[in-house]
View (tube, rainbow, N blue to C red):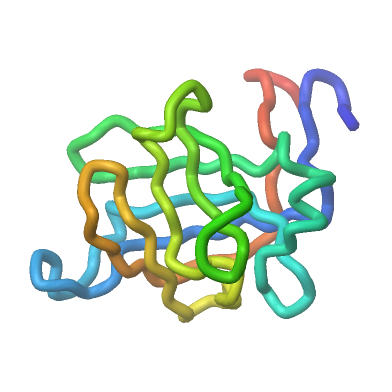
Length: 147
């Protein structure tokens, strides 16, 4: 669906902002480290695999990390892992070396104030993130000056 040069995200997708929760390196957490995820959430705030199948081209991720360039990828649902499936962030579909897996993301409710864990591609440790905001997904892409 498009309007002018905008590509509109399906209405059932939500924009979820995660920020780094308190940890030894960041005792107050860090609003400058996190993820912005366009995700298919069901009525209880959980990731919806069937909805992902219908909207996966719109399920995008932006990783923001103070002092580093933003990374852009896709939210992916793959067979295997605990519970028979794994949700992960894929930055380059030619390799799995850069994938960042979530810990049981399919069972967590993405509600403001909740916590989720994601393992960075560069280490084996999971990092805990707080769900700061959940709102409607904005247009996935828009050209400058469109209105």
